[in-house]
Image 1: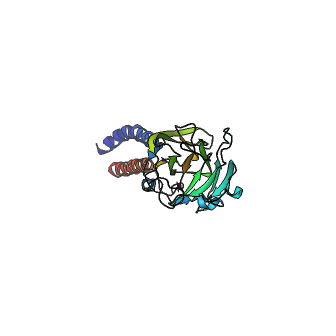
Image 2: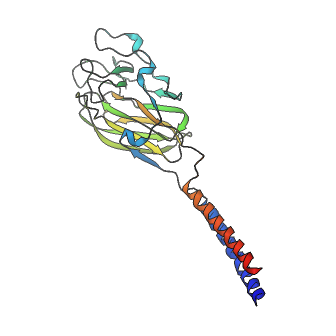
Length: 261
């Protein structure tokens, strides 16, 4: 009788085992990768950064401008962790607008609503009464290796209220996602400039683009925070679940074999 029960169970168990394995294989398929908007620098969990003081001479508001401080519309910068970042700022068509440059925000000097002492990558303007004409950008940052997250604070020259946008693209220049939020500018040096960051589950970010809703004014960003690719040594939760199912199936099979014997 025991043998007959074992034979009966065996016939029932084999298809159920195959079904279970198929389900397990389905669980092993990772969930869809997603990007999320990050509005606080600390929430990005960055492990690298790019300070714009590293790209060359800093613009001084005192005295005539030094031509050596102006940047080309395309140049390469290197993060503190050694990651190459290609910077692109399209040339403006407005006559007299300065090329891009880096300045340090402070008072006396050039006050903004970034943090006091921050170095700002600025798209360039034509000095004059506010609102001064400027290069609206966008500022596009391309990474030699895709990252899992990136972001910076942004302000618009001489404009108190605007909408700021950040967009992320993959290695095929396909849009991963874009996010917009209201922003403000002032001269109070209170670090209130809006932070625009994107975190991506799949570490697919090969390009990040910053822009604003004002088509006639310059924009600036402070230090770029970077979250490099997450460790490949830690399995995704879906993989762990799949392995758990397979282990469970193995245990059931072993128990069935023992009962049949």
